[in-house]
Image 1 (cartoon, rainbow over the protein chains, first blue to last red):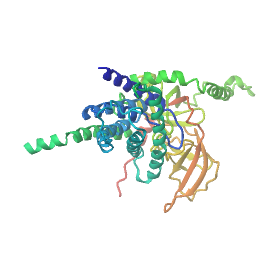
Image 2 (image 1 turned 90 degrees about the vertical axis):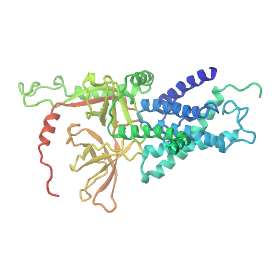
Image 3 (image 1 turned 60 degrees about the vertical axis):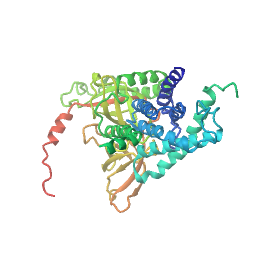
Image 4 (image 1 turned 180 degrees about the vertical axis):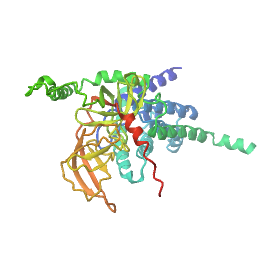
Length: 171
Length: 279
């Protein structure tokens, strides 16, 4: 029950933070910081994949409807939720995920977080910008946007975890 | 039959993924061209209210700049009031003149949400169909054109701005009268491009670009920008023209929506042109 309330609250916060704050930040060079992939990463490890895809779809559509992107964020978020278990399996540590409750900054080693979350962001951003531009002759601009945006999103997401997630006391 | 069920069981995750993906993408590609309902866009009541609250906070950021702009425009308009003129020959100057028939009306509006770094940028305004806004009305600010109304609800509307790919407003070079279509290639919000001007026309840098007013959306002669560079398109007898927008879309707040009172008359007349029969 506690987990349910936490994730509902996070859903609302991530939706409004992305739509009203981060989509309005216009840094230049095609950089767009996206933080809602972090919400999908932080869902419980053993969540049903149908449920996680539906949650991702709802989150994406909520952001879309406020920022007039008509389904772009929804598509990218569903892709991310679909690939999440596959990526987790590929990067499984030697002793598995047995005693981890959440894939956050404090519970997982930093190298794991950087590689897994970096890869997730790369896939998500590339998919998003490809659909947004959707032209073969703009591939250079797509790559520029992806490569410049991924580090920005990664740094912002790690800062969010450091600031807002409480450090477990036993570590 | 059993094989089929086994197949669905094996691939059920991927099937749900494909259905959701199809739903999202079909919405994206249909809404991009023609919005059918407004509840999925920022013109809906709920999203409009959220964005109004956001605008209540952010509208103060450029307040002094916007006031200054409005003041300058007021001065320009005040100069044209009858009180500002000295009648040199009395009884020549008349305000109620039957020679002039009002063609365009303007409705003031505030931009409550806007972007400029996406591939297609839309602006949300705080007025809607209850204020008389309809689809395909033109929008401009005191410095230049802004876009065309794309989608309308009761109290809000979404404007497809000149920072979108297929905006296709007809514009012309003011000095020569050469006309083409306005496009935006997606990079810089300060620079737009014009296609369709034949390269045997003479071009000059810094010449002024204005609207042509052919489609009845914009009146003739609204400022668009100034030519910054031009070069011939490869293998085509056309110029590739880039220009600086005269309006800075990164801090736009006050705009006007154009209502063309004679648009129906023009469309009706143009519909009588017979289609080309010879191919």
